[in-house]
Image 1 (cartoon, rainbow, N blue to C red):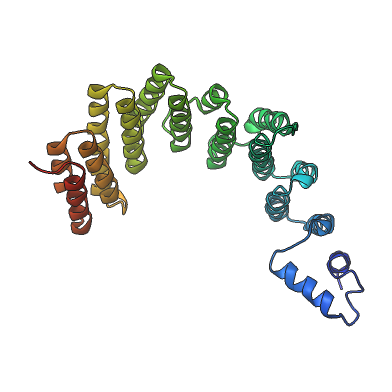
Image 2: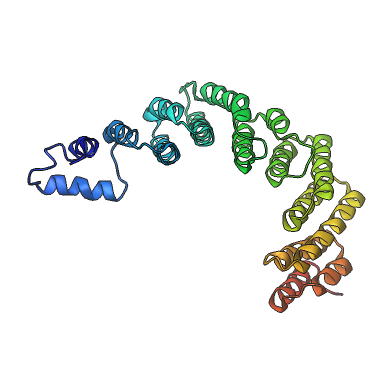
Length: 308
């Protein structure tokens, strides 16, 4: 038997893996197969994972170990230590972000308990800063870098570090991950009553969507979301113009045979209706090529804005 497998099985079974096993050991095997590992087994699992020679496979599996162990507050140190050993930069940084996100989640939970103090927020922010500084280790043209940026920025927003997240997502070319960060931050700022900043972020999203190429569906949804934010801030005329642009990209998506193009137009049509533009809503709905979607849109419009 492979020595690494033997050590792992001995840890799980708490007995000689090559000897007959009793019901308690068989139960332990069942738990392990079901992914119900007690934390005491994690070091043995780590040692076994480190026996994998292929760096990518080892990185992916260690990432899974981090995400599983980070669910336990008492294992944050272990999870962070494991994350730092992951050889592939993407999986290492993704794992560190997962630890940071769990720390922030627990910090919010503990913050509701009177008299309980912890340093989880500070530790999480330190990890996020490390991730930000390490992003250049992932190729800029690599899709994985956008994923990492998005994950870290969302964690920053959850920590209330909106300006930090916005700076991290700053870009000159359209990228759905970046605009999503701006929209999330804008919604958080809206809850704070920061109207002027919300409008500016919505304008940034709209401008990036206009300049993008292809990816009609995401650009349409981004424009619709930007319009909704501007509507909420009282910029009715500007919001209507942005929503008109969203419709154009929704139509382009539908014409390119995107399976979600018609669904996007339903959403845009109902947005028109919600804000009092019934005629525009009906006109948009009639352009939907999928009959079921078209009827759905018209039904929703009548519910939102009944004809007189």
